[in-house]
Image (cartoon, rainbow, N blue to C red; front, side, top):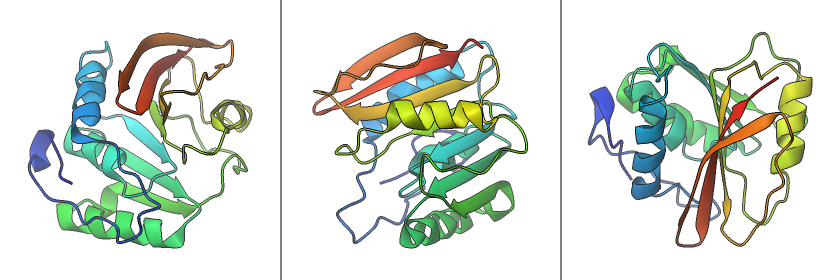
Length: 182
């Protein structure tokens, strides 16, 4: 696995020996980031939250493409160690915060985020509950963009305060890019 764009393009990331972590494919990441880069706001200076971080590939890709800071949440301490290792390889330790958090049990946010990645294990049906918890705890603002990745066969009912900007399927995976309209 590697960073596919930005200042760290081509940099290889350390991958987990644990097969329970399922990184987003390069092709899907490229599509997602092309869409994000071409939104009105883009990623320059953005504050990112990567929930269910795994390897941290999504948040690290955002940092490579100009995001100012990324907070990584994961319930697995080994995953967070991997995120820190990959961030250190990129020289980005000063731009990250890694928190051992089990979604959707979040502490209140200090401020809202610009972009939030949600990629839970496919067998968990917690995307709507996670989004509602993020709203209730202050992580969302008007126009926050959320990117949810889930099994293609799942029919996710997103909360009413989200506008679906784009949906696409890649093999057994599907992603939705959503914008908050609070």
